[in-house]
Length: 492
Image (tube, rainbow, N blue to C red):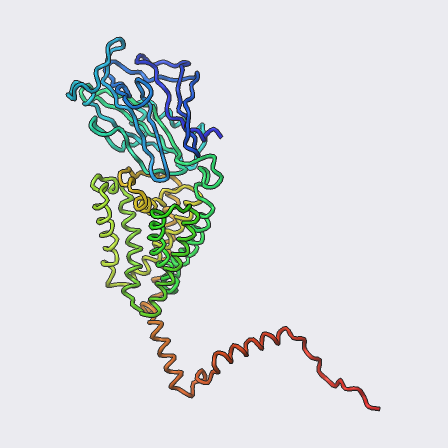
């Protein structure tokens, strides 16, 4: 498939009036799976952008890349971030004139007065065709089209590094472009747009068509089925809910730990996370059965709900504020928001528990959908996981598309959460808020059987005799039944 090659940019014609014709072009073709690439040179049709004398020259002060004047945008991506780099621009000059020096002075008469507006444009979700890509690339070629179609993410000055990082969105097409602006003359010019899908078209497992691996699909599907059960019946089946919460609590931290400290492959990490999460769920259930500390259990439940609320808070444009690029400020603020949820509901624990069941349980469905098709809502929590795993993720800009599929999944998430919460509140009306302490009930029952000799359970035989009796009963099932009646021979 041709989509596996990613076009980094094409060269421009020299400054002059608009024209369309056959030009010699250079394209950087980037392989999706290996990350390798090569320059391709050939003849093709191209449309040049008209650059007047006063317009800044994109890439006119290139000191890093191969071309003397390089208006291309260079893109690199991995699972966590997508980084674009470009050469600084120069101020405009006449065709035959000598270019102004780039680094002789830093005054307002040099290129240091220029500003760079970085724009981001999302392709339609699920559309990976080449025709759609070329159609939308045309919207990112001219300055007026870029400003009308795309969203400005950040403005850089000449003192800033000409590199910007964004969160990677595997399977989602994104086009980037930079518009350089001369504030003194109020003129602008656009660089050559660049695009990426942040995934491989060649990979058999986890490609651009279906970003999720087989192991991820199995894990998320089972997790979603359990989550939907918790959404509607979690408060009634209290121990099952505790297992679900303990699985999330320990599994999340364990996955971060083994990812940062070990070189294990993804499938192995996911399998170990499932084992550790199951142990965490059993541990929380066992602690409730033995000690019966309701406050401790509800603290875990409230923290999981608070984690989702805090993740949603930083999923908004608030998360792109420069103050939160500092890890200390970010994690302290994140923890305070997460702790605020159980503190607010500490006086009404049943309401807190039902809310956590409905919201967290239904969100597991969103994560399962993301393993089969792209949805932006999954990045509410995945962005927090990425930040915990990668130190460089703190400086990225987090923006995701919100298109038709996302509105449908958001409506479904809200419907499931509201239905689950409403059903559980109506069913639990008039019931005891939480079940009694299991260990205390077990001890009371044992003491009752010991002291009350009239209780039939007091006269139960020992466990060993009961097991032998059960084995003998099973053996009788496989023995041939003996016929009834007289079988002795007649005596003559």
